[in-house]
Length: 317
Image (cartoon, rainbow, N blue to C red):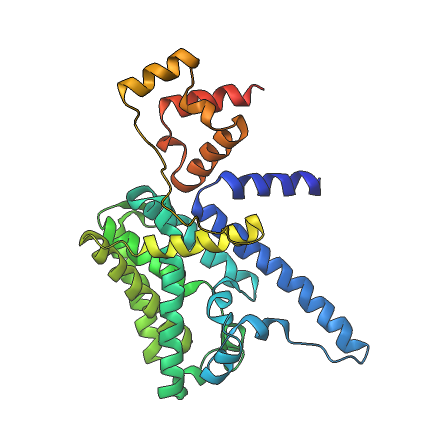
């Protein structure tokens, strides 16, 4: 049974949209944290010195600790403590992330999420060091005294981006019926502003507002022709190639010709030697991998009719 579940999750992660992948990653980290905490408790019970696993990857309010653990700037936005904490974040990500992906492309969901998390972290650190009394009010489950964690800032970036992209989009809410997206987003932002006045989870609220601001700015820049997703995806692609290939491939010294349209004379000489097609330039597996990578990035609908036919024939083998 567990093997079947793992295969289903792996398939969804490989071929699902970006919202699905982010949710799977967050849930996987949540489960790992649970087991890590159990192990640490066993070590402590046996008289050992247990390492606080969560604090190694959560964002510290002291910038000096952040310099010592720079990875926490990213890892904190995939870290949750408590079932309700991750449940609501993932539900909001699922509801609003699909809207973002449908309207401006699946390839922009993760960059908005990451930029929102980074923006929220920057606001949190700024407030924690300038006006620390706000951060001291944060409940331990979210901040653990002087640590912040959670996907909320990244999710708020997704939420606000969805509202800016399509403010009149209709969502059906339980007990309320059909509600325009702009009103839902407005209420969520207002709740964070009200939390500041009551000193309730103010550190988290500042981070949420930082993420919300990033979602707004991202869409505004995109409308002006500036796509902030491009450099983020480029960086992620390079990082992914390190893990996939075992290291970055050495770039060729000279220019590389990706495609060259042969002249009539050249095509004639090719036909004399025997028919050679573009498909034959790549191996069967390379063509299949290229199509699957295209589905991961832009979805099945981005395929040409020839690519869909090739994939259909491959599925029968």
